Length: 431
Image (tube, rainbow, N blue to C red; front, side):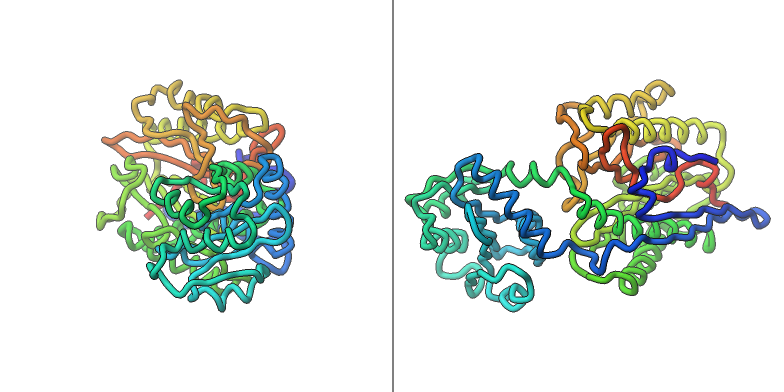
């Protein structure tokens, strides 16, 4: 039977992860077995130094357009995006200097110095610790000024008043330019190397949903925190055995995601409870994964026991919205138009009062990042942008349904990275 997933995915997506779903019945039990086969994306589960060298050159080309002599990045995610230097972001300032030509330099707390030596960026300066005798942002800009940029145009991110004061104390003769959008705009469009890392992450995200379903199928009347712990343990074990690089790896807290059921499935961001699952409940397994710094989402809605006619209507409305959203994530589309086309499916089904949120959000190095598939966002979508597609329908007196796929904007329709099924007949669990 053809599925929405098969209809929308592209050859690139199919090459990433093939899933064979086999639904078998054992008495009242209905079990979905999934077998996966990963394509070989290379020897690493992270982007390599040559990728970052090319990225620095791309950044420098954009800097030239803005007549910037230097760009200083203090945002941890942007430091990772441009240099690949993964670190624990704390109160200790850590910065990347990208000059108008040549290689970048890092300004780091001393506790990072040994780890920096293992990576490709060899030029660094370190301070002992925070807060220190001199404000550490000022310290960074004093050293940038001494490197010959003291009288130049320096681009910075989000120059808040307190930070700007320290920047100017450190480089009083420099012209400071707000260039926070430079990296953010570049991050929106992913190349195939980035998408392959996201496909690798999706392999684990899809597995986590399968593990959650299996746990419920085997154990019956479980609690939400038990499901979360079981899925987190399962994917942590799998990642530990299979990942080739344990850098930029994460599982959402608490215990890996959100798994509301019953009436609580109408809470889009429900915190875990001690309620016990029962027949007749809706169940949402809202899970994800992060590999090499890149995030993906896999959320699936299930019916525990045979769905009622009302449950089918709610589910069908959600799925129609989800399918419309994914299909319309194509180059040239306007973000808010995609949102409207998606949510209109729920409105047409008569469930407008059960809408609580937009269709989706950008996803990549951050789990939520711009642009937004939402009313008010007039971004023109470009091929290679990546989004969650997660319209939901929520009846507070019954429960809710929401699938989320991670979708790549392509020329004619969205490419869905997820491989886990979405049709209602594959989403029934008997306990």
